[in-house]
Length: 479
Image 1: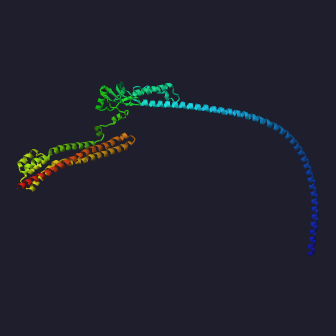
Image 2: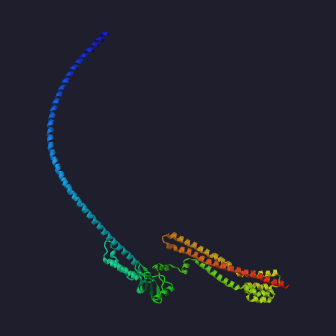
Image 3: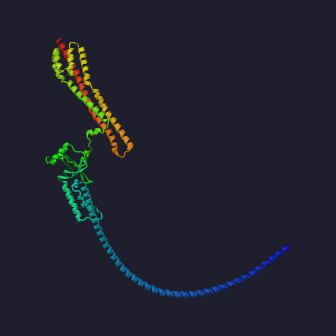
């Protein structure tokens, strides 16, 4: 076994040695091939370097030639540039100069345009103000075409001329002159029935106009929409009519004038008389008026009755004191007899008839006489107080019914038209007003009459005590 292994080892060693020699031969061959290639490459590089140097020499010569040409061209361009720069500076200065002149001219033109537009605007504004002034002036009713001269000025594209300005000046002076005049003229108007008529017209500047057609005299209202005069729908009072007639006839220097230019006169058409206000209060007004009339009758009756029963008690006592102290009953009766319908005299007369009784009995007699007089003095006073309470309650009832009617109207027609609700509101307010207007005087009269009755009762009681004291004082003196 060992022999076999040694043989195998020897064979392997031989094989390795043979492979190493073969590889060395191959390396020598390859090195020679490389040296040959390197020599070829070096030769080729030398040829290429020579050719490159030749080409570089040619390029250098060409570049030098081109450089000189370019330098000459640069110098020429620089000279041209310098010349152009000089020309450009001159042109720039010229442009700046022209721009400054243009700016000045533009500024002047703007100022001129602004001034002309401002002037035109002022003129048009003045024309608009004048047109509105003439619309509001009642002088236009006598010259309805005088505003035709202002129509060209309303054209926004048209510049106003001197003729337009002169026309405005003429209109201003005409308005100033006529607004300061008081004149009587004959002219057209619309009467109260809506018909076109002519009559005498009194013009008081721009404030008031009055008219006279036959025997009818009244005020005129100017309408700036139609430039016409309309007669006031409601004629003035007789006193104002007489004043206007006397002024037109030259018999008076004073006249009623509406300085509000018709606003105050228009209020006259809406002013309701007492009868109109009562009618607008609805059916509840009539019971309130009935309460007022009944209360007035009671007050008149009570005033008459209390005046009839009242008298100067002190004067009567002075007359009766002397005979009473002397117990002269016939004289006392004769003094009281003419005034027996008076309350105090009647009580004293009853006292003289019971003069022989004791003090207590006489006091009872006279107290009975006072109590007998009280019902006639207090008659209807409770009724008057009741009426004073009923009147405002009726007014409140009218207020409630009026508001109910108003709500019914709102339910059916809505709140779009206030005139539809005015009936119920008028009924509510008028009844309340009338109820209070009736109740307050009734309460004052009731208080006055009650105080008067209390005064009379107090006088009867006072004079009764005075009479009794005088009577028994005299009796004790005699005894």
